[in-house]
Length: 109
Image 1: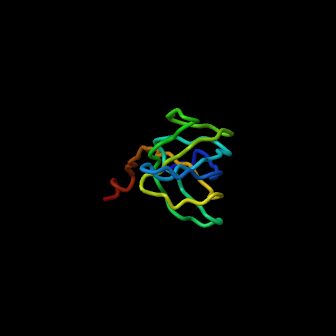
Image 2: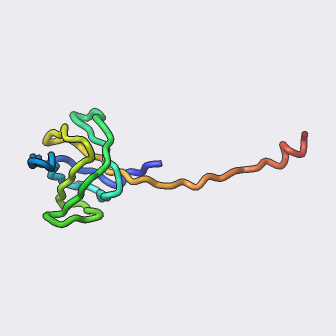
Image 3: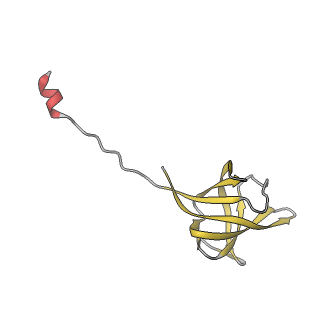
C-alpha cells in the first residue's frame, strides 16, 4: 500500500548531457523520500507514477527533503517534465494482514 508523504511542484528544469533532465522541485508540504515514488500531475490530470533515481539538496545526495525546502530530483527513465507539473510524494507502507476465524460458523456445521 502507498501513503502520501507530501507534495510539491516543478520550479525549474535542468537538462544535462549524459545525465538527463533534473527537476528543480519546491517541496510545499510534508517531505519527499529517495526510496519513495512520485505521482506526476499536469494541469490537474494524472500523467504517470515514477520512482526517484537521485535526490539532491544543493549538491549533496540526501535521503529525504522536508517542506519548505527545494531539491533536485532525477526520475528513473522519465524526462517528459514541464515547469509547473505538480507532484505527490509517496512511500510504500506494509500493512499487516489479519485472519479472522469465526467460530460460530464452524460450530453450526
